[in-house]
Length: 424
Ligand code: AMP
Figure: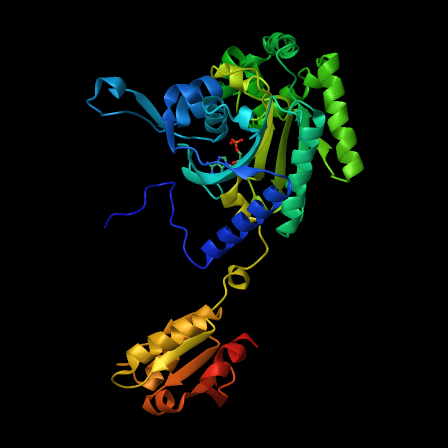
């Protein structure tokens, strides 16, 4: 028996209705903020992620699904390809490749699968889904402006609230920029030197390759050491400080609650200035529903022009886990089950079903070989509200027996009134 690969899963009904509910709501909210959809390829040149996300990150150094193209054509022979582990690099690549700034397309959203070879657990999968959006400049809308950061955060709060998700927390930090971060990283390195010997193996490696990542460490024994390390906020230059202050000011005015977390650095190297995460208490260890931030240097890192940007990615798997909505309430049941009785009734049933469906009803059609009892049982199993009994007499008189499956009550209804009855 061939099974789904570890870390991947089938999304089944009725849960898929929740996924659709999330996606439909996200699309509607994004539209209100003038975002439009982009769809980029599932696989890209490995180099895009190496340069975009960063060689030293966990994602690039150990989690990517990378393979060599088996093509025999010289042009792409042996090219290293990677299943996208995230979508921001792909969107920025497309933005550069198609000169999207010339077309004023600077607010883009995407929905789709991403791939990372992580240890699977609840809320963490190897194929998972992200809903994300990016604002990329240069643009008249001023994508470098703190107003864009605040707009994106306010949009996310609106989306979570509209989905009925309660108990979320927005954690906010500024990770500085190319101008001030090197000084901070240097200070971190120095502060780590005398203590790193007492830390976990990962931290010892990170202290060498990418000291910022030490702040991400979750090992309990390391926490007292990390608490005493220098903080980015004391190293921000004047423009980053002002930028961050302005983001907070706008959020305060807009009434978006947040808490400052100066250890929030995120797992991707491209972030500058604003970095954020929305967490949800009910999710357990994998409590981050979404993360994002500003990436003013990403376009240049992958060979494009200067194009500051800010974006986020929602973990759709986790978002669905945090919904209180039950799948049943967003997955409507069939309104009617047509039970054709006896030979020659299938054609009549298909015709009647088509008319009712055109009038907006969800209709299932039974089979004329079924006995009435079996039809009614099948209808009940589907959770159908009504059964419509269609025998030769009904077909001739154009009046049908409509049976309410919850109450057992039955009435005779003329064909023309059936749709209205189903809707009532
Ligand atoms: P990142 O792209 O790492 O900034 O992650 C953004 C969001 O994607 C996280 O907050 C998670 O909600 C979600 N996410 C990241 N990795 C996974 C995974 N392996 N499985 C499920 N969700 C994930």
